[in-house]
Amino acid sequence: MACKAAIFDLDGTILDSMPVWCNLCGEFLKKYGISENIDLDGKLGVISIASALEYVIKEFKLDIDLESACRQAWQIVGTFYREEVELKPGIAAILDELKRKNIPAGIITASETGLVRDALKRVGLEDYFDGGIISCADLQTSKRTPEVFYIMSEKLGAAPEDTFVFEDALYAGATAKKAGYTLAAVYDPSEKNPDKLAGLADYYCQSWEDFPLEVL
Image 1 (cartoon, rainbow, N blue to C red):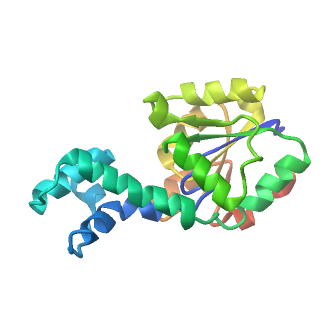
Image 2: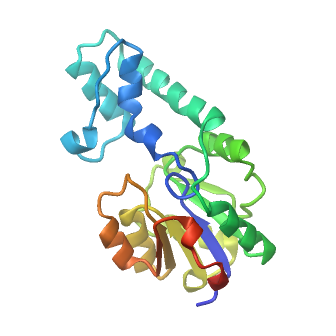
């Protein structure tokens, strides 16, 4: 299987950034002197940040409106992306290999474009993605349908069967795999079904440091 292009997820794949999302409500509550571990995924399933904050405001009887709460939460996330976020181990070597071989790459992410650019600037990867960034948040779509992958493939000038998709999430990996892409997946603690992801992927790594660069 030739690799003529590469599509990357951002959070949990390029960046070790899932903790900021998983712990966002807890960090938000610290502003109000409340130290509480909030497992909203366990309580409510996968929900939006606004819905999570709405739940937290009601649960802890906070005197704040939802719009202000969302603004404070995004400030927490923005500061993390600009000042703290780090790369997942081994990802830099993969990106360097793609660049050395002149294989174009792009990012499809649930995060907003501004956050992505801030994060890439912090970790020094601004110049690695010829295909640019597709934000599902900006387009109001998700990686549960293959359209965003096809859009990026067109930007990169490669067919799905000639494109590697790098992911850490089962739902997105399953979409890419079903659409005909080669799936390279990495473990992240945020994924609740890593065994299923491992069974689905063409290449599965506990760390990108284990990824076989020779397949690119």
